[in-house]
Amino acid sequence: MADFDLVIRGGTVVTASDTIVCDVGVKDGVIAALGSKLAKGAKEIDATGKLVLPGGIDSHVHVDQLSSSGAYTADTFLSGTRSAMCGGTTGIIPFAAQFKGQSLRKTVEDYHAKADGQAMTDYAFHLIISDPTESVIGQELPALIKDGYTSFKIYLTYDALKLNDRQFLEVLAAARREGAMVMVHAENHDMIAWLSEKLLEFGHTAPKFHRVAHANIAEGEATNRAIALAELVDQPILMVHVSAKEAIERIRAAKARGVKVYAETCPQYLFLTEDDLDKDGFEGAKCMCSPPPRDKDNQEFVWQGLADGTFDVFSSDHAPYRYDSPTGKRVGGADTSFKKVANGVPGLEIRMPMLFSAGVLTGRIDINKFVALCCTNPAKMYGLYPRKGTIAVGADADIAIWDAEKKVTISIDMLHDDMDYTPYEGHEVTGWPIISMVRGAIVWNDGEVLAKPGDGKFLRCDVPATARPRGTSVHGFNPTSGDYIKF
Image (tube, rainbow, N blue to C red):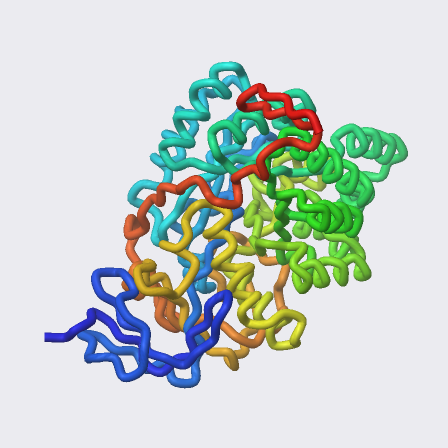
């Protein structure tokens, strides 16, 4: 009788801290042994000359979600998780999005109904809080955190979603009290609204003007304000989809003085620029997202942030709105103004291969940082580590075997989402996962999807260590206990 259900032989095993050639033994869906010349497995994979990485965790995706504008994502939990695993990602964390007037608990139940029997990979949920009423903050949110929903996102822009500073402080205090990670979409709403109004007044309606309205300084100001409010309450926060130099500088400065602020960036800020929004007709809408892609020089600041530790997480912010659809990019009508175009770009499947090719193979980041950004840190940030995000004895056998020399030209025809375009059409990459497995089961095998709908399981998240406050706020007041400390 075989000692293991599966043995992966002779691959180069990479974690966030180590790189070693060894075998990986899997038993009952869990990594049971790491070493050389492991005993026989019922099934064996020869990974000689290949990289054996933890399965990626994409901790910022939008699937089966209605937006505040009325647009609806093309990807369901079935197509979204299918696309993920074909790109080496074996776990996703989408959003259960509350709209004003909705019960937070009912929102979560609705999203579970969408995922049940559909997901091919494991998944957890973030919450989106747009209506922080007394009952939501005092009753529903604490109960949901205890049930394993330990992270939630708030917006500082969008009419239907934004919180004012007072509401944001109440949410931060609740997160501090209960133990949760707060994610922040940071753009100054009034700056964007004022610029948009002036642009439209002068007839500037094309997609390229979305970039003008969402100015760098609007992201920088809101980032600075979010950090200040979080520092006041002594609550860790994670700034999502950071794009602008001005925001990066403020995050870097806050980290340097010991503030518990974390940051995420995305492929669109490394591989798209404002020029991609300036295409004939409506074509630029394919690359519209918020914050938008910036100029070429700004890309270098994003790369520097990945290399120097300013960024902790690399996510896709997969927001798949079809180009030729009245519920997608054209939700505002055919050739509508930039203000009414559905915001978001797809990126689930290409997230890891594009960063590997342009980051690891060029020497911008090393392979261990790549694993940290795409696998380990997301698991730590959101309470899934060490069960997920690493290759270690006792961890789930979520593994991606990579051919570091495989060359792929990205095209909508070879991707596995339900989109009608990719903004990265024709982009050539080197390095692609040839096998992905979830809890020891092979779900993707070099061109063949093996997982079945419903194979993916819901993941209950623990309170992450990263969500713990330093101890007291900068002004000496503890908003949880009410204690005032004189310095």
